[in-house]
Length: 128
Image (cartoon, rainbow, N blue to C red; front, top):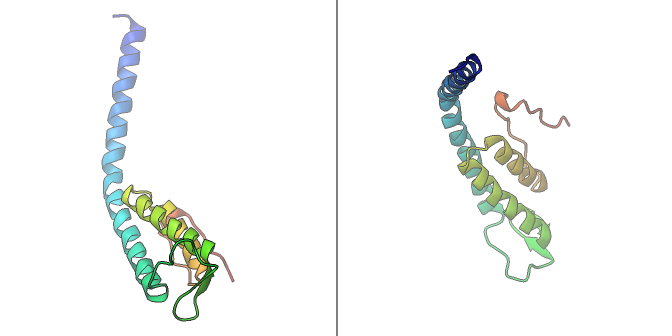
């Protein structure tokens, strides 16, 4: 073997070892992330069921009237339900930050308070 081949093989082994060590260190944080995400999603889904306890019939009506003064255009309702579905998919895939941003969109439309994101997200909520 020539020197270049040995150096290349060594570099690959070191990179693989570094990647596996990094993955092992990130595993606890990634395991905790879906739990936080799923709890936030469960809380938002509970609120969703309380204020909008039904699905509108097709075709979508002009207004969807829920409880506690929640009235939304049909297209807005559809958009929120799509964001909720995608947030659930993001949570299941371990994309906590993306899921929480989708949930923030739904909260903003429903005029609900923002929730605190984990510090790892480096996300600053809107100041009002």
